[in-house]
Length: 102
Image 1: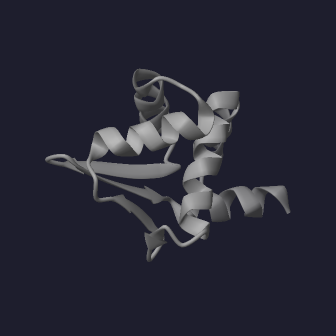
Image 2: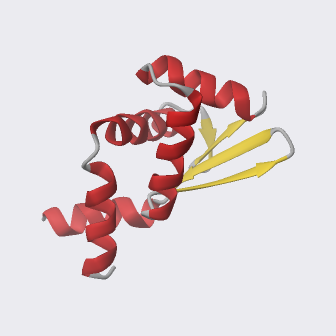
């Protein structure tokens, strides 16, 4: 991974709210609420955002903004299909961060 990519990642995570949101998403995957590294919300996008809002006490619009920033940094990918929402942690970004810190 290029240095510029790492700069984007660390810049995105420098916001406390985004760092907390990313941690929540990562923990959902680690706790088994996802399959094959993907967290999938089958109840629709509004309930996914609501769940995230409850975990870190932010509005849905703020959560949406932070999701977009995490996606722009390459930390997550998410897609909307109708009312369903799928979020995937970018494992390559995690590996790049770990490699940088070694």
